[in-house]
Length: 145
Image (cartoon, rainbow, N blue to C red; front, side, top):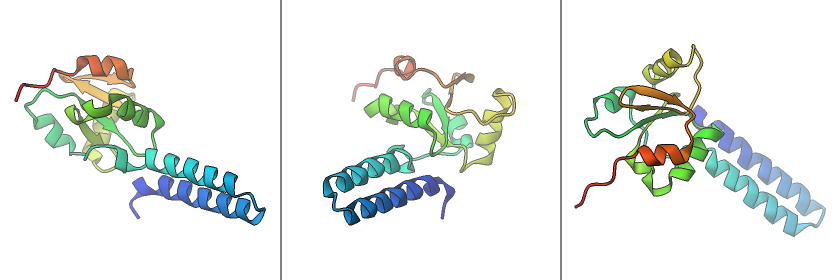
């Protein structure tokens, strides 16, 4: 199993076990609530909510001027950034540091050896855990089609 799926799988399993326990106590409303809660947590912490990741090399060679966000699955700050960007998330290059050792090395290089994410690069300048509203303001307006 890819390690990006370990946390979501554990969350789904815990939700199922909690729901089974509540059902045995004849509390179906709480069982449904726990199932929904843990399903939402599993989805938020899974790679599903992020646009497809590219490699560090692809992100650096992109000539479109989009910011590059280095992230990892299970990071609540990365999920917050992704969710708050909403439909503008496709205007950012997403690089999963767990899938690309070169990306992890780049993040460590600007964070005193730590893999602190999200780390955003705009014009080769790093910003660690920026406010989502600030990043949204840095995005170039979409071109007319």
